[in-house]
Image (tube, rainbow, N blue to C red; front, side, top):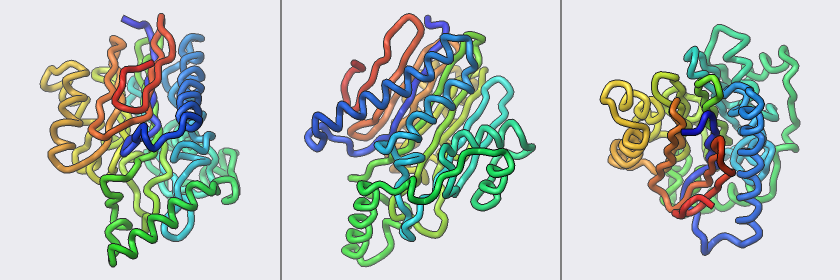
Length: 318
C-alpha cells in the first residue's frame, strides 16, 4: 500500500465528452495534474496532509476553469460568494468560511480560522475582517470576473424567466447542471489525514445561499480513525445526508471498508434523496475511493510509488 498520497476533484455534473473540445479537455487535465503534483511534492518532502490539501486546492482556486476562487460563479446579484473548509484528521480541528467576496484563496482563510481562532465557521464581512487582521491576500471584485461565468449567469437568469419562477435560485440547478466545487484529501507519511474543499457556490443563487462545502460533515470531513472526504454536487442534498461524515461512520460503526462506505454514501442515501454529485476519499492505509452518480467528475490521484492519474468522464484513470 502507498505510504502517502493525494486525491482531488474539480467538480461533478453533466460533463459530457461530446460537449468538450480537445483543447478544453487538455486544459482541465493539465490543471488537475498541476494540483496533484503540488500536493504530492509536499507529501514527498515529509510535509503534512493539511499542507498538501491546502496547496492542491490553492492551485485550483487560482485556475479560472474551476468554480472556486478566480473561477467562481456569479450570484443573481452579480457578485461572487465563496465558501471553503479544511479539516485535520489527527485533531479533528476544522475551519471554514462562507459568503466571502474578496478572498483570493478562501481555503487559506479557512485554515487560519482553524489554527488562529476558537471557532470553526466565519461568514461574510466578519470573515473578511478576520482575513485582514491576518494579512491574508485580498483581491478586488475584478479579479474574480471571467466572461465564461458571466455568460453562465445570463443563461441561468434567462432559463429562470422561462420557468416563470425562482426554481433555480432556490437551489435546483437541474439535471444539466455542473457543480464546480474543488477539493482534496491526503494521507501523509505520519499516517495523518486531511480534507479541504472550496467553491464559488451555485450560479444565479439568491438570499445568501450557502451549500455543503463549508459545512463540516456535509462537504468536508477528516478523521484518522476512518477517512478523509471532500464532496462535490448539489449541496442541499449533501447537507441533508451529511454525506462526508456518513462515509466515516459507515467505516467506524458498521465496519465497512472505504470503497463500500463511499459507494453506500453516494449510491445509497444521497441518490435515494435525489441528489447528484460525488466524493473523493482516502484512508490511513492509502485506499482511495472516487464514486459519483453524474455523467462526469473532474478527478485525479497521485499515490506514492505511482504517477499522477486524472479522469473526467466515466473512464479509467489515465
